[in-house]
Image (cartoon, rainbow, N blue to C red; front, side):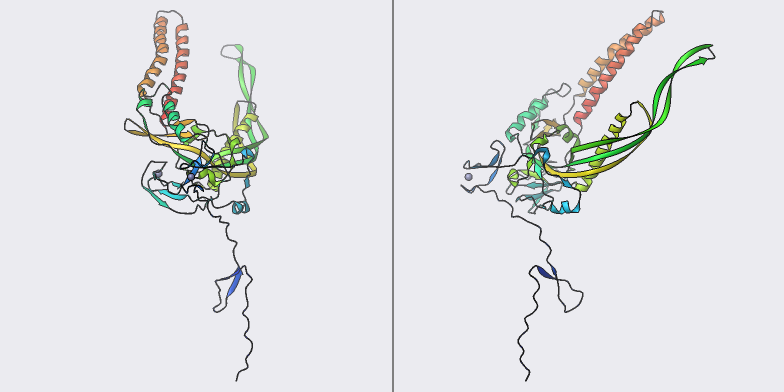
Amino acid sequence: MATQSPPLSPWQPPPDFQPVTSALEGITVYAPRPKEAQIESPVVYKCPNCGATTQYDVAAGGVACEHCGYTLPVSGEKVGRQAEEYEFTLDALKQAQQTWGTTHQMMHCDSCGAEILIPPGALTVTCPFCASNEVGVRAAAVSQIRPNTLIPFKVTPEMTHARAKEWLGKGWFHPKALANNAVIDRFSGIYLSFWTFAARIESRWKAEVGYERTERFYDASARTWRTRVVIDWRWEDGRVDLSIADLLIPGNSHVSRVILDKLLPFNLNELVEYDPDFLAGWQAQAYDIPLADAWDQGKEVMRDRAKNACRLDIHSPHVRNFSMVADFADEAWRYSLLPVYLAAYRFENKVYQVMVNGQTGSVAGQKPVAWWKVWLAIAALLLPGLALGLVGLLLIAVGIGIIPLGVALILLMIGGFISLKIYQQAVASEAA
Ligand SMILES: [Zn+2]
Ligand SMILES: [Zn+2]
């Protein structure tokens, strides 16, 4: 009879260990459980009074219930340009929270590929970027870096239409009927993703710099002394330190850069700390230009600015063989949401884009041009010079002075310059 030994209590792994795949059959291997990402439960926006859905109300500056009027102000501590920035380290990226803390659903547009976060139960499912209805909605936790800061909407949805109408009526080279006949779609308020970058750039430049010198020389053919300007070239170098803060780079490739540029600036002094309350009932746009790519764009802009600063360091208009080495230090980034209203409007069977800055109320967009007005203006600008030039030529033919021809040339140059500016403005106003 076998002796009964007391049952061995099996070895227990420490509480924060878990079994992992083992290379040896029959042997269980334990390893520390990976630290779970902090996933906070998203805020559900229901009125504590009546149970209706609440949303962020621009005029009230808080989360409000349309049904019973209950309003809860959002603290949104103002941090402005002093808002915390992150270094470009893996640690900083890991620390950046990966969820937005909202119950927004991800909407994917099959037409333009944009991904937009829409509030739960949103009634309209139209892509705000391309106005397509071919959208798919799926509930997905936003597994992106959480924004650090945002600028709350200040312009109410009710104000957008009047602003856009006023903007449509401005400018003389657009169709006269534009302001009255344009049919503007409903504006959709959306928070757009922006990266902001800061860095110190130490640049060393080297170039051949030319200096003008007047010298006398003997003109052998005319048998006389004359003066002429010569340029002496010499190698120079220098160092320029430049600090750039709050450089904005859009995080989205579906918004027209041309229009977005016209919509800037935002007043970054009004940045507040991110709070999901601001997004209640509003759309937001998840970035599709990741941090690393945006930083590449940002560095390019900074390099250009450093180059300009170096050129200003050279006190001569004559420069050749310019080269520059730029060292970046103290690089930091921030991720912000900025408020914009998007809409399309129809005019004479064509669709144009228009945007309203949700903070400042400034409007930018595409505007059709009445080209006959542009050509008429250009003709009016060039005609006096041309006419005077003809008269001048006739006068020279009969041997009377060169002065009218000179005046004609000056008039043509001025007229040509203004014409070019008008033409460029007209082209720019149709661009998107
Ligand atoms: Zn209520
Ligand atoms: Zn779309």
